[in-house]
Each structure stands twice: as structure tokens, then as C-alpha cells.
Image (cartoon, rainbow, N blue to C red):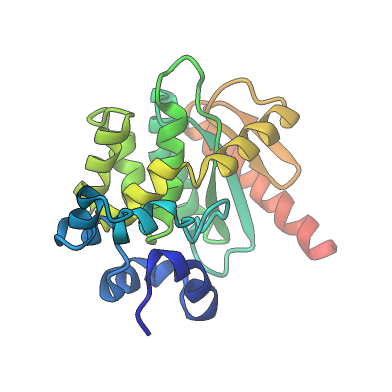
Amino acid sequence: MNVTPANAGKNYAQNETPANAKENYAQKNESMAGNATSGQGAGNATSGQGGGKEAEAAAAPYPFANVSTHKPKGAANASVVMEEYVSFSCGVSARGRNLTDRAMQQNPELALRLRHFPLPQTPGAELASQAFECAADQGMEWEIEGVLYSNETWFDYPGLNGAARKIGANESMFKWCLESGAKKKIVDDDIAGAKELGVRGTPFFVIGNATIPGLLDDDDFLAVVRRDVKEAATNKKAS
């Protein structure tokens, strides 16, 4: 069955997963940009015949709107998930990337899930958070994470679309997601959750019932994570 942007959401629910969304999207040629540049949609759009496929694609809802497909980093069977509130504009959050990787190496039962708390003083930080979620729809959130932290990306539409290109994402799918605002609610919900927890800056970690506001010295941070992971695992078994 041919899949168009208009029925992509339905098709996804039937037989697609976020992990293979990029492949299926490309194979089924549901890209709105592809329609526009093929001469079919673009020709109709400029000929006054109602916009054709380009108009249909632009009006169609993004199939993963308001749904986070982000998968935690770490072992699939990890018993404890550490949540880290980050802003991709924050240099301390960037430094925490290496520390969380070390923490997971030392604690095989630990996985990491990112939550969003974009710092309001940095223009585009919230859009960068949405870009992370858009990349997750193609199973590439952890690839774009490194690019977002690299200080080589402008947090605007051209810069973030360029980041998607750099990691080899399907650009038209990513652009459709980002420019439609499909992930704004996810980021807004994370911000609201962060405020309830009392988050004031990034990074901010939650492990079970324990919180770690900010980064400590490397050894101290890893020691606190080990303690909190052990406590969270014990509480989980008890429940």
C-alpha cells in the first residue's frame, strides 16, 4: 500500500515502530519535500490547481505528533532509569554527557533518559529540544545529541535541519516534524514537570526518589550515582 503524509499516522500504528520509521518513510516515499521537488506537487502549487500533493502534505498531521519515541540509552533490560534534565545550550550539561556514560559503564543496571529544561536565556534552546525528539522518531536521538552539544549548530531551523543532515537522518521527515511544532507539547510537559521538581538549572538528575542538582566533581558524582542506583534497585525489588 502506498503511504502518503495524510495516512502515515494510521500506517505507523499498524505496522511501524520508531526504530524503522526512517527506513519506512524513505521506502514508501511519503516525504512532502520529495513530492514538491519531483515536479508533481510543486507544479500544482504554482499553477493555481489547489496546491496538489505539496498542499496535502503541508496540511497533514505529523504522524508522531505529541508522542515521544525517545528510547533510554543503556541496556534494554536496565532495572533503573536515571532521568537527566538538560538544556543543549548548557556547557555543564554537555560535560555531563561523558559522566553519565561512565556511570552506565560502572552500573550495568542503569539506563539514561533525557528530559528537557531548555534555558530561557538562550534563543533556540527549546527548538533544539524539539529537534532531539524529532530525531528520536528515526531512532537517532543519541546521534543528534552529540551534534547539539558540539557548539557548531545554530539553534534555528536551518541550523537544526543541518544537524539532521549531518547525522544522516531523513531530512524531509525531520523538517516536517520540526517546522510543524509536533514535539512542542513534549518539551512543554517536561518543563512543567521540572518546575514541579524544583529544577532551576541544568543538568538535574532523578534516580528513583533521589535527585542530584547539577554536577559534582567526577568521582563524587559517580559515587552518588552508585549509591542512588543501589537504593532505587532495592526499593524496586521491595515493591
